[in-house]
Length: 189
Image 1 (tube, one colour):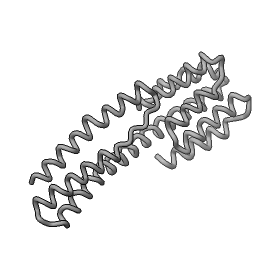
Image 2: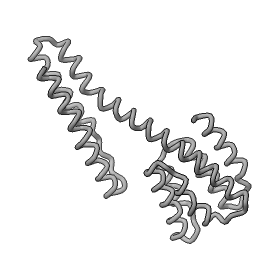
Image 3: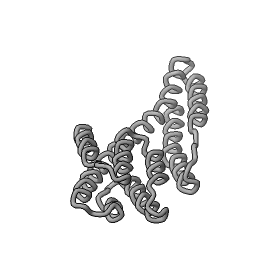
């Protein structure tokens, strides 16, 4: 019973304190790598020893310690999958909008300004706003802003998207690249 209460307290601490602090630091410093594995290992060992002592069995200690170690990893993987799905849904909307607007011969400046309006996922919407603002501020250069987009969202589909935009900015025919990306995203969704 004590082990279960301790494990629940740890999960609540992990969910509400550690993850929020990590996100707050990422916003402030833009690139922070906080490794929660050490904290997870410490709590797993504490759970292992407490449950071994409480139940007088190494099997229960190993079971509860493993659960305490694996639950945060499962949670991270679940959240990462949800974020990727939201990003790819928004990327589909953005790519379709971009393709339609560029085929109607709208300038890239205006097209990039309209892209955030299509997004529903706030993190991706902020990235599209940053893309447009950096495009404006750097004198119509996309290199640094597309590089930041690739770093923020390390997905294959984002790489395809950024290469299509780079191709369009260089004056190439990017309509086929956008159509291929739309097909890939529709298959994933």
